[in-house]
Length: 131
Image: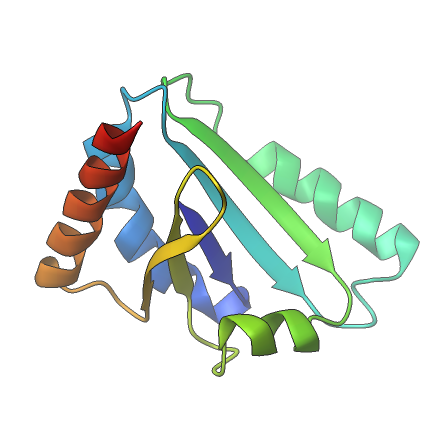
């Protein structure tokens, strides 16, 4: 599962990732990526970027579950990347379920609804069975 978020999308992404994490925390076949886009030119300057990354590393939890969780920060202009993925609202969190080949198999955005979470978890289980 891969998540894309801007600063305002964290609560939205958490509404997806926490139930997903709970469902698959024991799985060694699932990886969770949280990707934050940082477009601000000021935050992209090296001294500020280093301080920001240092602060973010300290604030991340060190849980040791089977689920591989990765937090990634991408600095710079993401216009074409967002355009390809149809990320239209910069204040919304987006979530993507990728198969083992990196193809998008499921997509959601905004705050998770129960039926959407059920669909995401079901699709993930189907992909895990395909091995």
